[in-house]
Image: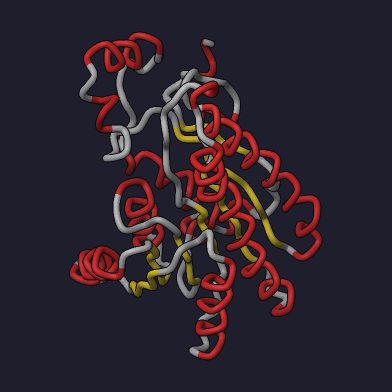
Length: 255
């Protein structure tokens, strides 16, 4: 049974993985046996994250590049080709948040959120899928969605549009790549204790709302997403495609 979830010999690229959810997912995939590639925009923070995993005995490497820059992404994959590093698993985790009412939102800020949270998943997955198809050995694409892939919230219109797009992009990937034994699925985290959510966590009213509106009556932890990520990255999910699994403590169940 454990072989169903064994990632030994597989290489997983996790974008936006120098900290937070991305780092937790990278560590979880490494613990399941994968060789992991960490990514971020700053070389120093990526190197620090790689060192943290290496110190625990995991096989980790890093590469700093902007996932919204198509040429930088293509260059990274070309280098992995030269190095003989086949990326079997992609976790499109990179994301940002920008809170402002839609009527006050500048187009540049809208575009920045869309590019980082949605377009980057297309750019990275395209490069990976081309190689997975050419190798003929299949692969796994895991996109990180959100509760806002399903439900709207005030002041996060661009983020909501991007994460709603992630759900449908995942389905489009499945429609095109499933025949090549590539499973494309998504994870929709609920309210998770991360640095990005720190202003919300420290807001007493919002903190109380999260706890009162969720059947679990608490925030989630980054490591509570790991099990779903390992499942979607492993042979256990070989016939699961185009789905989004919400890990939200039951929040969507009681809307």
